[in-house]
Image (cartoon, rainbow, N blue to C red):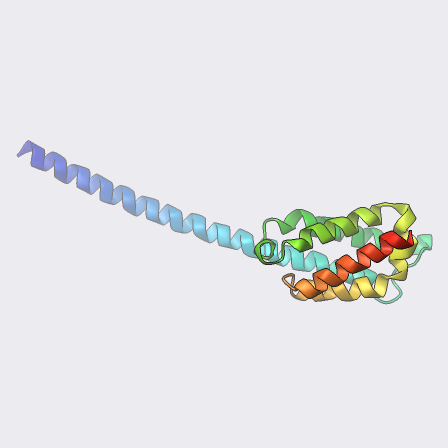
Length: 153
């Protein structure tokens, strides 16, 4: 009789533990999905702001336009830092390296004029990536632009 009561108590304890763990798991899964969604939106937003900074006549080698250049650089750096936490990392992992390369070029003054000259093309690639960060063609186009900028130095 005592063995039976102990068995029933153990089963009840295990069932209660299983219920608690399943609720906790569901809560953690919802939080993870929320964070993943926010990271995805963050990268898209950063790329959108960076592309806007490259658009039109917003960039030039003049000091008065350096705000947009610095803003674009900081947004690209933010996207680079956040990218590894997104769903896009699995489908377009080349974008991380491409954005990091662009950011590193922008930090060097010797490339600034070449970047400004290619600003419309960079704008176009970043705009496409802000709409779809999994776009491998836009990533490849941006990578080619970076190579061209390095050669124009």
